[in-house]
Structures are given as structure tokens and as C-alpha cells.
Image (cartoon, rainbow, N blue to C red):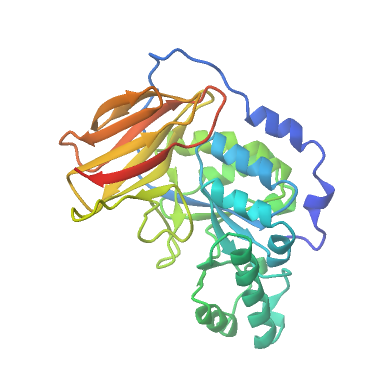
Length: 336
């Protein structure tokens, strides 16, 4: 949803201040431990419409800093104009969806115009490195049977929302935080790429979700609901690595965000494909592993963690000290 004016073009001033506030980091000692282990008792879908824009990189920085992943519903015209920002969304671990090419009232047009809006956006996003979207959000949330038939032609699942943040209507940062606080397991919230108050709200959104043991998940193309990120059903690129050793089967290690603080963040790791696995995690300097749970851990180097099962199942977690960086580790998995 949006008003007729492109507000992000008019409201970019002052965003640098908000981004700097988001990016503050406090150093801690290596023996510090998190106030709580990463626990995901449910998943919610954070979505941002109308990008990419001049605010996209600030938004991605804030999301990554606070351990959040989201679905970016991009307009095709802006994806075509800013392919580097589409790629930045993917590189930041976000998922990219289709939000039409020019944001018209689709249900007031012909089936041919619907087809053009959707198909051109599929192409623009794919050409920009965003993959082929599997999710579609109709502009203004307006839909009908004809539009849904066109969506089906392109293999798209229509995603509306359960909660409207009202950021498009100049909602305050407090109101946007409160809207996110209403989310329950599986629900999806509408926010916008260009909204300055939404950018300012990101740290508090992350804190609020963590306090309720909710995590930011992906939106399932099968159900349209927010679920845990999964290598098998993930609707877009993300930090998932699979390494199949020849002749010995394969396994997959998938990262998802846990709780986040100003100085550290938690990552959850889900392993599938085998119960006898070894996951290698390469930590980008100057970040450091502070603690782990549900694994037997070893450290071949200061920037590498090797995780093996300890009888606690195929899900484990790590707490990482930021030290000024917010880049997630890379992971690989092999069958032991």
C-alpha cells in the first residue's frame, strides 16, 4: 500500500541519523553470556513494500544489525533501475517478492495489463540477481479472481497481511513498534521500504520479538504463512549451505536469526539430511563466538567453529560478539 506520491523520494533526509543510531555497538568481554538462549517458539513474516529505494541500504543494515530477515516486495520499475540494491537484499539474507511493475490498481485494468505488470517484474528481479519470485503482493492489497489466475500462471502465491503497520500513513515509530507487538505465530505484517519511522523502529521490533520468543521467518509459498527458514522450501536465497561428500550422503545446515543485542547476536542452525553431521562455521573477523548450545564444539582456528552432535538433536545455536561487524558466518555441512 502507498499514497500516490513517492514519499521515499521526499523523506530521505535525516535517515543517516537514524541509521547511525541503529548501528551503535557496545564492546563486551569474551566471557560474557547472552541473557537468554535463542528460542523460536514461533515465526512472523516481516515484509517491506515499494523498494528498492534510496533507503534500502539503511534498512538492510538495520535488519542485519538486529538479526532480522524479511521479505522485500519490490516494484519491477525500481528493481530495473537499481539492480545493485536487489542484489544487496539477497546478499543480506532477505527474500525478494513481486509487487507489480508500476504499482497500479490492478483490479481496475485488463487481464493483459495484469499479466504485463507481473511478468515484467519477474524478469526485472531475476535480471537484477534476485532470483525468480514465488511470492506476490498486489498493490493496495486489491485482488480478484482474474488477478489470482495470472498469479497462478507465474507460479506466484498471493500474500496480503495480517497486521498493517500504517507506516504508509505516517504512523509514529511507537505505533509501528506496537503494531509488530500484535503479531502472533505465522502472521505477516505490512511495512514499507522507504518509511523513516519504520527504519527507526527496527531495533525495538527485534527486541519485542525476542522478548516473546518469536523469530523473523520466511513466508511459505505453500501456505502464505510465516515459517522457519528451510533449505527445501525457502522462497529465495539465504544463508544455507549444503556440502555432499561423494558416496556418503549429504546434509544441509540452515541459519536463522535468534535474539539480538547491541553487542552480540544469536544464530540458530538447523541440520537436515543426516543425524551424523559435522558443520563448519567460518566466522568473519573481527566477530567472535561467545558461546554455543546443543553441540560438541571445537575451534581449529580463532575464526572457525566445528560443530558435531552431542545427543541434543539436529538444532543448535551460537552467540556471536559483533565487534563492530554484522556479517553472518558462512556454514558448510558434511556427513561424518
